[in-house]
Length: 80
Length: 80
Image 1: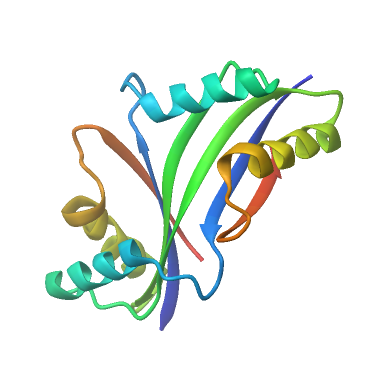
Image 2 (image 1 turned 30 degrees about the vertical axis):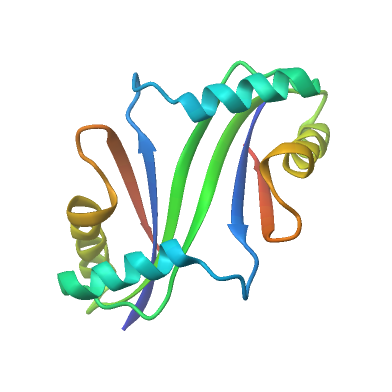
């Protein structure tokens, strides 16, 4: 069966995020002050799998082997 | 009141996405074939606003003025 998995990859808490810092600074200058801003990557991938659990398992392998760096990233997987 | 807005910014349909293409190719080589893969950026921003509608309005301005390029990007806003 076909499943779509949504994978969100973000930096672990405590990792420096210079992009978020630059955006927060730019927003401040534009008149939109914010105390908290985080960035993440979102991937939607169509997968063939026997069931939703199998799709989640494949998505986890995709994160571990390609998309995420386990030293600095955390990821979440949603099967749609 | 404090709101967190989740802004998702993706390429419009039909725009070339070389990153998605490269990832699809790498997944093929790793044994995870997929016919459809899309990428997007996710921003979570804490905003002070009178109500959820006002927070959504501010998030829209942030997209238009800073985060998105309206020629190539589409964006969605969720207020949490």
